[in-house]
Image (tube, rainbow, N blue to C red):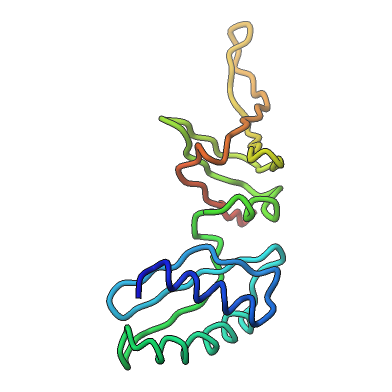
Amino acid sequence: MPKAELESLVEKGLKELAFEDTYLVEVKHSGKKIEIYLDSDEGVGFSTCQKLSRWMEPHLDKAGTFGDNYTLEVSSAGIGNPLKLLRQYPKNIGRVLDVRYGESGHAKGVLTGVSDEGMISVEFEKVVKENNKNKKVKVTEVIKFEDIIESRIKISFN
């Protein structure tokens, strides 16, 4: 079953199960292992993953593409996973984000905003020389979503 068909099946399942707030982030499959990553504006719970998994199993069995022995994992796009969709950013405002963008751009700081135009704002401290002394200043980097190569939420245990 092609990836596009799996994505379509997940979307259909989310719609039929009335998970309006939940959306597909990524589908991975290799051999007989299928991984589905979901997210939502409020967070994805175990029961949502379980219900979608149970909804998908008979559809996958009927298609027969993966045979009788396949592994289906449905889970939330966890903190360790990169952010893939612009829709994932607003709920992470206030968290530390590590972003690689453009040719060689890099910013690690607090996600302070997401615009309707597809821009994110990351605030961080930068050391600059002023009168032969180092001084920390706050800088806000505005990055186009389309320029982002990878961004991850950084977990702080402070």
